[in-house]
Amino acid sequence: MDVVAAAEPSSGMVGHVQLADAPGTGALPIAEAVDILIGHGYAGPIGCEYVPGGRTADTLGWVDQ
Image 1: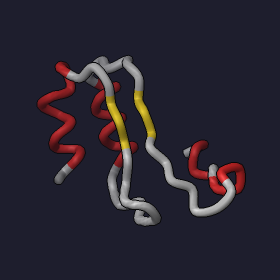
Image 2: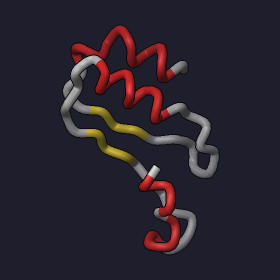
Image 3: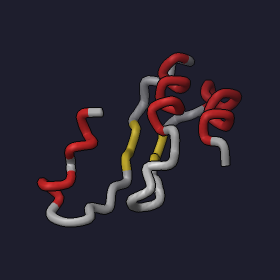
Image 4: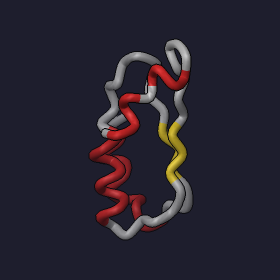
């Protein structure tokens, strides 16, 4: 599924966003999809599903991106 293309037409109807990627791949363009939603006025919650590959505190370096 093209996440960015899917986010564009439905952005005005979204009430909650839940994001997840296949563990370890980082393949989804999550930042682009979020930028589109925000650009269309989305100001609701964004849930980020995360499965750590070790101790949680040691694997959160990606959060600041």
